[in-house]
Every structure is written in structure tokens, then in C-alpha cells.
Length: 199
Image 1 (cartoon, helix red, strand yellow):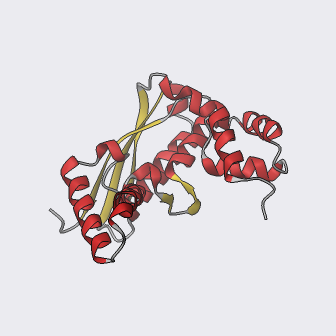
Image 2: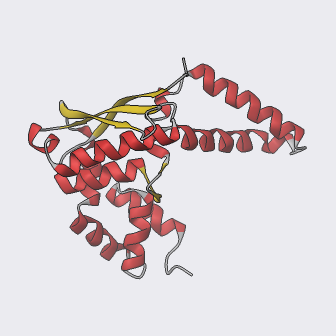
């Protein structure tokens, strides 16, 4: 059993702005000591990555991936603060990995703000109907439906998806790692996925 609780993970996330997996790893490595975990995250640069989120990203590259069969392709625009970082191997690899991930998983949007309201409304109606049919009490209905909608967002939004090469990390974690390495704010701006025969 882990030497820390979910509450400890939450506190560490609030103090550092780091992702959940990074916080769990830091607490694991420090035997559950929150102060040492903060130091651990700072030394790895993860905590700072979150603080950069407000800085302007006007440089970057368009990453691309074409599947070996030539039937699926993806383009992704990834922005950073300087042309210097845009030219680094870490940044180029990030763009390529994300384009490959998009080709494999076909997300609907970068994050939940990009999902059209009509799609969310439709998912909510389906979730309500399924929950009613399962015989759950009416009082629990809204909470269950909200949970299903959150699960839907995690499933179909690029940044929330587990990375195809390492499902222990989300795409958001991957972006934060490169942001921590480069010292710059990195944003996934937009993407396009093409599949032969799909209109």
C-alpha cells in the first residue's frame, strides 16, 4: 500500500500545479513526504511547467505522421515561445509523437472546450437514458451522468487520452514533460486527421 493518500496527491497538485501521475511518482519516491515531493518536482522542472501556461506561444511547428499503409495521416500544430525551442529534437519528437497518437486514436478535439455543445448534449441524453434503464435511483442520476460525461471527455479529447506509446502518461503529461525540459510554455493548438475513404 502507498505511504500516502489521495488527499496528499491533491495537496501536492495544488501546491505545484503538476499533473496527478507526476505527483504520485514524486510521493512514491519520497515516501509520502509532501515537502520533499515538492522539491522532487521542482528539481525535475515539472512544477514550473504549469506556471508557464500563461506565457505567449507564437512559435512552433506542424508535426505530421502518415501510417505505413498510407491510409491514415495526421497533422498537428504545436506552439512554443521561441524559434530556438521549436528547432530542438525534443520539441520535434513531441510533435511527431502527438501526430502519430492522433492517427491511432482519432480524438474529437484538443480539449473539452473544443467538443461541440450538440455532441455533449447528445452524449448526456444517452447517458441519462442508460442510467434510467439500469434502475438507479433518480437522486443519483445526475451524479452518475456527470461521471459518464467526464469519462467521455477523457476518452475523446487529445490532451486527456493515455498516450499510445506509454498509457501510464496522458498526452497532457507528455507536453508538460517537454515544457519542463525546454523551460517554455508549450501548447497543442489544433490538429487534423485524414483517413482514406472518410468524408
